[in-house]
Image (cartoon, rainbow, N blue to C red):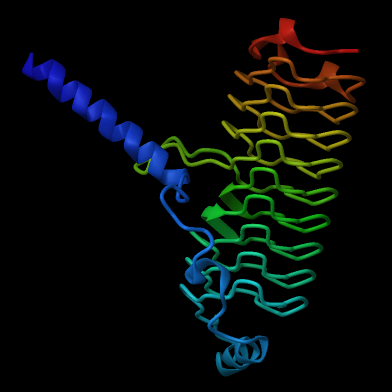
Length: 263
C-alpha cells in the first residue's frame, strides 16, 4: 500500500513538473504592469548596447514590453527572462542572443535574424516571425498560434532531448501555427507539437519528424524528401500532392496513416 501511494505521489510530481516546464502562464496576470510595461526606453536600450562595448549586453529580466526596438543590433545579447510582450523587433539582429524563459507574447519579429539564438522555455504565443531567420537556433519555445510564413529554421533544434528532461518534456510547441513555406531543412522536429499547423509548401527535406504530433496539420505540397516520419502521428493530417514522399524515411512507421487526408 505504501509503495502504491509513493508511486502515485511520484507520478503526480512528474506530471506537475512536466506541466510547469511549458505552462508558465498558469495563475499569471498577463495584464499586470510587469507584463505590459517597459522600464527602459529605446534610447536607454541603445545606450546599454553601446556601453557593452562589443561584449554581450546583459538585459536579463528587463521589462521591455511594447517598445519599438525594430532594426536594433542585439546580437549575443542576454535577454534571459526579459519581458518583450508586443515588442516590435522587426528586422532586429538577435543572432546568438539568449532568450531563455523570455516573454515574447504577440511580439513582432518579422524579418528578424535569430541565427544560433537560444530560446529555451520562451513564451512566444502569437508572435510574428514571417521571414525571420532562425537557422541553427535552439528552440524549445511555445509558439502556439505564431506566424512563421517564409521563415527559416534550417538546421535548428526544436525537438526534445530525451537525455535531459529533468523539467519535463521540453520541446517546441507550434500548435495551430502558420508555417507556410517554412524552410525546415535538416531541422530536428522530433516530438514537436505541430497539431493543426499550416505547413503548406514547407521544405521539410531531411528533417526529423520522429514522434512528432502532426494531427490535423496541413502539409499540402510540402517537400518531404529524406524527412523521417518514424512514430509521427498523422491522424487527420492533410498530405496532398507532397513532393518526394517516395523518398521519405520510415513513412511506413508513422502512426494513423490510414487517417491521412490525401485528396
